[in-house]
Image (tube, rainbow, N blue to C red; front, side, top):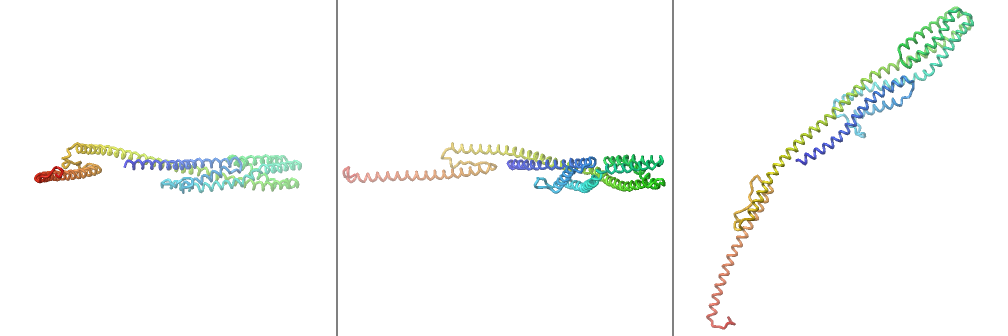
Length: 392
């Protein structure tokens, strides 16, 4: 029993060691998922604000997070990851998966929007410069046409407004600052109203050269307005995805953090169970050792009694063999009882042999006596015959 307990403890210790290694691997992967959720948000932030279309780090983080999440949820025998053994962990991982699916869709939509807007943003300065150039030509044409100072002042302001729109539109696309967008909107509205007033102004319409450049500038302005409105629309979409990712990231992090704690509690629960088993095994082992000590003491007493009986048998009178034997108590060990039984049988055989020997000795004595008597009778008969010694 003691050997069985020791073997069970050793086997369970080896199993718990292997399970502990797997638990450590799984807890490490689950903890890494928390880091990856933050890394994805960081890469999204950089992609939005550094104006680069390098998504390699973001894609790597997204793929690794999803693969690890599937391994945790469904298991992976190649990596030594077992499926969740706790219903609470399964429920929490499924919750993480439900958050992750729309979260990834938002990331993919954000990447698509960035890829759409970045090429247009690269030519924003060039388009703004062209609008400035056309606005400057309008000023020069009005000066050449000797229009009044109000027209010159308004056309000069158009040049400033074109630069103002380009500056604050660029800043808004980079920082998504609401104040920058407000300033851009005011400048755009003022530029557009001034351009319409020029088109409807009689003095401008009278001068063919001025009116022509104003129409040309207005045509480019309408194109520029559509271009920048598209940029801002895509940027608003990016900001919307970015805000959603920011909100979902907190939920994803919290859910994954709860999953890590559930894994930790599950592992600690198994360790506590193992420790309890060790305590129980220790108690059982102690009881077995105590029982073995008591049993050994009894066995020693029985052996001593057996040896004493054997000594008495060895030192006893041969003639008393039939009266002696090695008879032990009923509570003695089976082996000692068997040995005493064999010895008793041997003693009985010796007794039988000794009795037979005594009988044979008596018969031999009787035969000798009869032979002696017969010899005397023969000798007496020969004496009466009167013959010499040689013939006798």
